[in-house]
Amino acid sequence: MEHIYRTYCIIHKLTKMILGRFVSANDVAKEKSIHLKFGVIPETAREKWLTFISNAKVKEPSDFQNMYNAGYIRETGTWCLPSWIWTNSAMVRMFANNNKIEDARNIADRLLSFQKDCGGWIVRYDYDKDGAIPILAPNDSAYIASNAMLSIFEKTQDNRYIQAAVRCADWIIKTARPDGMVYVGYDMKRQKWDKSCVIVDVGFTASLFAHLYELTKEEKYINYLKIFTNRYIELFYVPSKKAFCTNIDAKNRQNSGLFGRGQAWALEGLIPAYRVLKDDGIKKVIEGTIETILSKQHKNGGWAYNLAKPLMGEDCKGIPVIAKVLMDWYAISIDERIKKSAQKALKWCINHTSASGDTEGGIFSFCLEGAVVHNLYSTCAFVYASAYAIELDQIMKQCE
Image (spheres, rainbow, N blue to C red):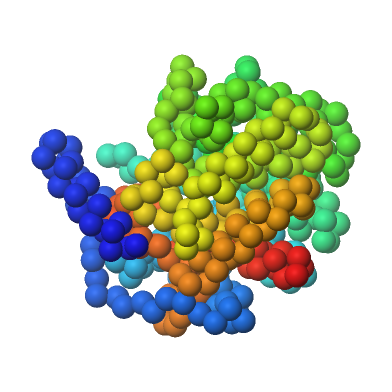
């Protein structure tokens, strides 16, 4: 299938050139002759994925030393995006769930050191002609608070972690839009919110408030959870497609196609919300989205980066995330179709795992979007995908 995806991408690039749509050389990954052997023995996959996570640690002196690079780009032969600190949270949760408490705590403490006084985190850097722009993002901060801070709190009962999650949640409530939706990010350089659009990824914000309410029983968290979840569904869910759009613009108009991983990010928030709220409307949306996900799965177990445009290629980040949230719903629904789908996805992850070398344990796929900023048409592996795959593997073994 990769040959088909690459052929489509060649046509895509040529078409953009013909139409006069400039593709910057900086946006396209430069091809290197890096040969990767994919596919590992299932019994060794877990250790391979742990190896990839270990190799991703930032060793050079920098602001992000001892954190983890977000991904690896095959075409350039380089690790990338250490500033995407939110991705480290997936490793905290994975290590905590596997009782590797010291490993989880080490990452959580580094994340804690990055938290701003307001309660949020600078989770990425955008760029313009004048240089880097630190972005303080409510949704990614919620991801850190829920998956890192609360996961390690439940294992250690160290109040520093739940206090960090509370600061984050209170900041999100305070800075949310009047309708309860969160903004996509705060530009620290210009000191203003980006109100141009909101992306589907904000859906996982709900997980923090569901998780925090379960731990504290404070009404303000369940109240905001209700407001946020209802508004999120109103804005992003497309009933005719039984799926979520990729983003909304400044006027709340739905845009773009059916971002595959975006469906998982939506469910990662909605499933915990349903667990707390027991709302039939939320359940209907979850079940509809899962029906779409099941119907769009490829025969090899993967999913496209864009469910509406399968020739764009498969999403190395999305597939283990989608499968993991499917199993989160399986725990509630006991729908055997879901389990079968997740098993196929786990096999896809194993078959796309690099077997050796510097990339050992990376789960790779080729995609038009590249899954990396400024590196289109590339083959990538992401560290948090390996963490999700480890959790998925553990869940599947528990179901045997």
